[in-house]
Image (tube, rainbow, N blue to C red; front, side, top):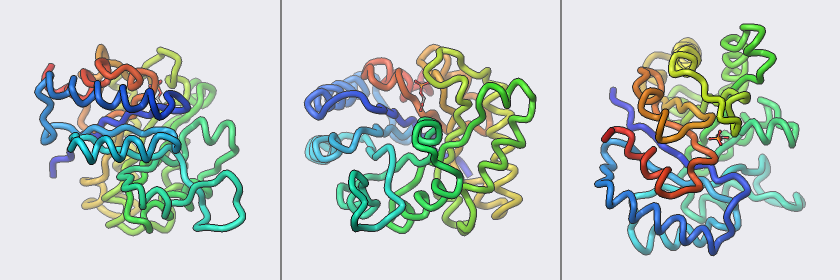
Length: 259
Ligand code: PGA
């Protein structure tokens, strides 16, 4: 089976809704200048909650070939959870994707694999696609136990999901030491872990799901390194932070196949 690469721009806590309009418009125009082919890669922007309605209206109104989604979700459906946003609310805004378990959520908000698993289930129940993040910190990488560490996260975040559900979701491998540091993992580092994740998915839920699940690499992806990263057999896309805030740079990343 051929997996359509997913190039997702994680804006993190950047750009207000007015700025978002400019960036999304410029991205769409630049992609069209670059003859973007949606059969060769899928592009999405993962924006702050406050931008979702604006981005939805713009993308749907102008029929841009862009997906969009949110950076987090509540484990609860509704109720007295001040500050939280439910999966139902995100589905109502037509989000395609919801990132869960980003390393910054794990680090600053104490999210565990169990919480991330519960969030992923809420996203799936509401007919959206979770982008579930895993990845090791520098000390684990230096110890050389990163593959086992990440596979243990994979077991936790996928617990209780069916083969069909796993086959349809996205896993983002993001080594924490490569996020926002300019320190990109080598293409071989990315392949080593992404390949191991796919093999683990096969052990957990079978070869068919392993063949269709999309596994992204994330961590200092730029137009200057994306081509070699995407050339790896088990890398099916990129979760791009800093470089996705610049629409021209992100458009070059999305159209990596043309270079
Ligand atoms: P970066 O972030 O591309 O700025 O390293 C990646 C991410 O955190 O998703």
